[in-house]
Structures are given as C-alpha cells and as structure tokens.
Length: 302
Image 1 (tube, rainbow, N blue to C red):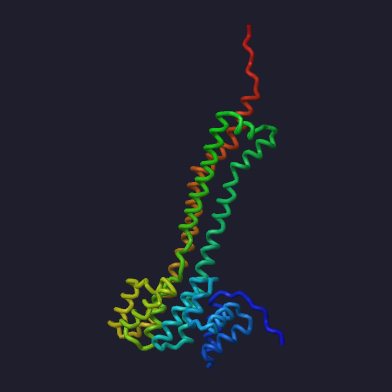
Image 2 (spheres, rainbow, N blue to C red):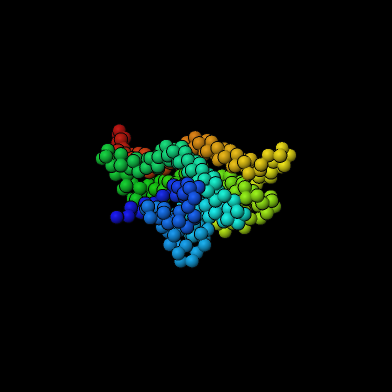
C-alpha cells in the first residue's frame, strides 16, 4: 500500500491529533510514528531525531519551520514529563494557544494589508511623474541628469524616496505583533501545577525550559496576581492561569487590529513629508524646467 505523501503542517495541526492519540491510549512513541506514517512532515522529522538518540523535547525543538511555536511545544512536553502532568491535556492546551496565536498573526496581517499596499503604491508616485513627463513629449531625465538644478532635484528626490521607504518599514515593523505566543508562561505554569507539584517547584521547572522557549523565563506580574487570587479564593491555580493566558491572547488580537487601523493614518506622515515632495522634485520640477527652457524669451521692441 502506498504511503501518503508528506505534508507541511503548522504545529497546532500536528499537536492536536497527537493529543487525541494519547488520550486514546497510545504511548508517545507510537503516536509520533502513526502521525509520521500518515504523512505529517513534522512528525517524520521528530521521529528521525528520536531514532538518532535525541530526547523527545530536543527533537521537537529542532524543527526549524515555525521554530518559535515548536519551542513552546517542546517546553510543554518537558514540563509535563518532569512533573508527571497528563501529557494529552498539556498538548491540547498548547494546541489551543498556538491556534489563538496564529489567528492573532492572521488578523494583524489582514489589518496591515491595505495600508501596506497603499504605501507601496504611493512609493511609485515619483517614478510615475517621470513617466508622465516622457509621455507628454518632454525630457525629464535629460533635465535631471544634464542640469545643475536637475541634479539637485534628483539627489534630493532619491534621498526622500529612500527616507520614505525606511520610515514606512519602521512603522510597519512596529505595528506587527511581538514574536511568541501571548500568555505562554501562564500556560506552562498551569501544566506544571496540574501535575500536583508546588508553586515554587512549578516555577523552577518552567524556568528550566528557557532553552526551548523565551516564554519560560518571562515570569509576569499577571501570573503572580493569579496565584495570589488562587491562594485567597481556594480555587485551583491551573484553571485561573489558563483563563489568564486566554485573556492575554484576546487582548493581543484586539491590539493587533487597532495597530493595523492606526497604521493607515501613520503612513500619511512619510507620504506627506517624503513621497509627495519627491514626486514634485522628480516628476513636476523637471517638466517645469524643461518647459521653461524650451520657451523662447520674448524679443524686446525697438
């Protein structure tokens, strides 16, 4: 029987079926192999690493595509095995977190798409001015390269175009979400506590996984607040931590949409300060100089 072709999948698409297999009673090694046999490229990579003698967590973290997300999975796996927490539940929680983080990135990408497209279109405006001048039968390139005034316009216009590009790139970069999964520290701490360990040991176990994910070293004031609430109210801390992590991802999605909406307005600054003056210098000014140079001066009477 022909095996299915390998397919590239995001971590959540691998981790969730893995959790289902573990809940059904499969042991971890068999579950990974079943996924690999049925065409999961990430599972094949991880199985190959395990067969070479690498630990499961190390094999998971060695996946280069979606490296940040696989690092989170590796940390969750290591925490779960260290404290004896239910592995299937831990993987389900991480799969849900990764899905929410993916939706955050998708929402932000959609929100940024229109202002970024407008900025790219406006960046070609100075070039369009030159093309229009040539279409009108003028010689803007000759003016820009052959006359001192034209050369000054060319240098200044190009500098403004570069400035607009750099400024726009910085605004877009600032509008993108931070790398990583919001609330991941709380998720890992919840996994550790679900194994029945103490809070201090849970923190130490999570912190020891910083080689897999930076989130393991990002102890937050929110986690401290949730743990204090758990002690005072007598409520299991793990569920409160997962609720806090979910709310953090919700806030991140909302903030991502707002950043995308604000970007459209902020991009007007480089457009007005750099792009439009560059258009005037490279497109309009050479045409005016060319027209004035081609117009004969009126002869004086007498």
